[in-house]
Length: 396
Image 1: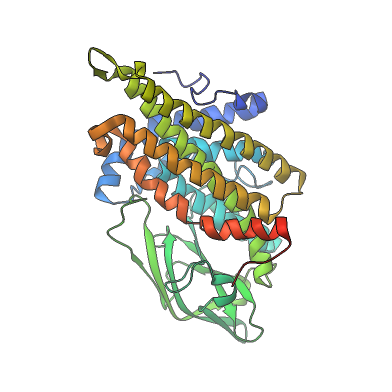
Image 2: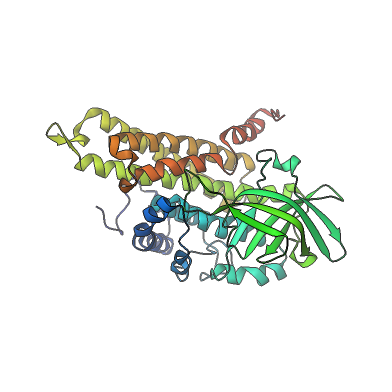
């Protein structure tokens, strides 16, 4: 096995060399943290379908939270989108569930507050979240609404003096069973626009129930939320969110992060398959010497290398402030599709051992399905790109 400080075997074109020396130190610290602190525990908790609350303590002091939020966290200056993308990749390369827990907190929840909140709201909530003393969640998807949530959001908000009354339901909300702050998106009954509200733990009328029986992301505590007369002060309404167009600005950034997660899943599965092919003996020789096995490995590496290159350019567009919805949508649709191929080929190399959790690849194979589906399905992201390149909307 390679040492932590070595270049990843999947980094065939040496994309890590694009990082500065300081950025690469952060990436390597993430690699060591995930390998030594997180990897030993994931199979046990994945099998049990439970979230290991002790890992929150492990994340404290790891220096990985709020990297892209200037003025918060351990790094005073915001780092490049290339680094934050590679850190997301590195986390998912070890485990997609843990990476998603972190992404919901550090990405969806914190970025909603950072991008949509006033300076007072940022200063009120983000320091504790950056320290992981408080955990966040992001509640948008609904039991009867996923892709159509922009125009068909059923959760409502009604102004009543200095408070808002929220009613409705949300589903698939990661971290919601234990989160201290849940960013809830609701349609204002007065102007019909979507607005964001930070609902604090213990607020009456807010109930989160864990979704059981999942075959993917079994460590993540996804919840179904019911909101019954939940009163939220105006001070907890995100002051810079006035319509779904503002929400879309947040989703544009986080969708690119999901593509980086998909790359991490590809790399994790490929590395497992490559090691296994070198060790597994059949007909008196390692299966890595078989032409058909090499074909699967090379196709996997090609998918990884092409996806990584796409995401490098996406990060550059983000850093330049010129990326659009269609840029992140193409990356999400393309990279998650390639991910599905790689995890299937990697599991195939394992043969029957590929369905046993102890060999790890089964976990990557299952978790890939969740990443393929959330943050916009392949079909919806395809239509976003299709509209951009043709000028014609195919949405119905």
